[in-house]
Every structure is written in structure tokens, then in C-alpha cells.
Length: 216
Ligand code: SAH
Ligand code: DHB
Ligand code: MG
Image (cartoon, rainbow, N blue to C red):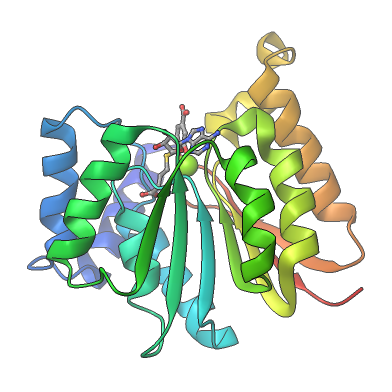
């Protein structure tokens, strides 16, 4: 990103972020706890809230919780009685997220489930359809997560996936053999060509693919 792009991102963040919010303390606490600093950005979070509200989302599935930043952000856009299930493989991340979900007063809205997503997803079919499926875990599994999302996200719902650009690696010939890169490229190709989706990639922190589910 150019320096001007960076300054414009900062400008949007300053203007639209509530700086007294609990989420402002979650990020530095996550860093102190040794979690990677790879959550969605505050300005992307606001866009996700707009998207969730726009489709009237009540039931959301997230694949890849980390410290709970995106889960708490999305849960706040749900109506009373809304539910968000989020899947996390690392016990330390799941424990941190549960702690912050409690601090946010969302323990009855957000359900952090610990385990590898591909092991947990079959059991989630019984709780489908979801209004939104947000994919943000291990990149090599993105095509499998897309298969699941296309099957279990309702018509009029959204499939969203972070890291559609892989920090630019998708255009770098030197990284063409990387398993994460080839999987995200496959994901993006299918996302674009899928007749059941109206889709694009938003230019956020690292490219956020957004697809509206049109039907079968
Ligand atoms: N959505 C979060 C960021 C997620 S980072 C936010 O924006 O706040 C990716 C997370 O996915 C990491 O915590 C990682 O441990 C988890 N993860 C990676 N592979 C996974 C898998 N196979 N199943 C479940 N979680 C996984
Ligand atoms: C990585 C994963 C993410 O979900 C992200 O947003 C940024 C980086 C990673 O695994 O490197
Ligand atoms: Mg991500």
C-alpha cells in the first residue's frame, strides 16, 4: 500500500472508530498475551456490521476466532436473540476469546467452539442454515470452507472471507506454489464464477471477499 493509502485508512479509522470502546483494549491485550496481530481492522468491522444489518442477520458462523475481535464486532450487529458460533483450533486463542466475550457481555450470544474447523463443521449442519458464514481460518482449507458455506448459508445470506489477497502473495510468481496461495486463488476463482453468488473483493486490510447468496 502507498503512504497515501495508509493515511486514508487511518483517516477512516479515526473518523468511524469509537476510541473508548472495549475492542480498543482487546487488541493490545491480545498482543501482550502473545496472540498474532491479524484480526480484521476496525474499519472493516464497521463494514461487516453494515452488511449484517442490511440482510437482517440473526445467526452467524465464523471459522477462525483468534481473540474474538471480529466475533464481538459482528455480534453487536445482531438483533436481540441473535447467535454467533465461532470455531477456533488453538485452546489459548479460544480461552482468550471467551474471556473477552464475557467482558463484552456477549456470553449468551457468542459460542466459542474449540477444535479444528473441518472436524466441527459436520456437526454444525444440524444448526444450519446460517445467515452469514465468515471464513478466516487456515488458508489451505478455504475451498472446503467454501463448499460448506455454499451448502449451509441461506439464500439472501452472505459468505465473507478474509485474506483474499494473502498480503499480495496471490500475484507473486515466487509464491505460486505456496499451499495457502493456491487455495486462496482457487477460492477466489470459484467465488467469482459461482452462479449462486453475487460477489466481489473489498479492498480492506487484505482483501475481503463478499458474496450474496442468490439461490440454487
Ligand atoms: N477472525 C479473527 C481472526 C482470525 S485469525 C478476527 O478478525 O478477529 C485465524 C484464526 O484461525 C487463528 O486463531 C487460528 O488459530 C485459527 N485457525 C487456524 N486453522 C484453524 C482450523 N483448522 N480450525 C479452526 N481454527 C483455525
Ligand atoms: C494470517 C491469517 C489471517 O487470517 C490474517 O488475517 C492475516 C495473516 C496468517 O496466517 O498469516
Ligand atoms: Mg484473516
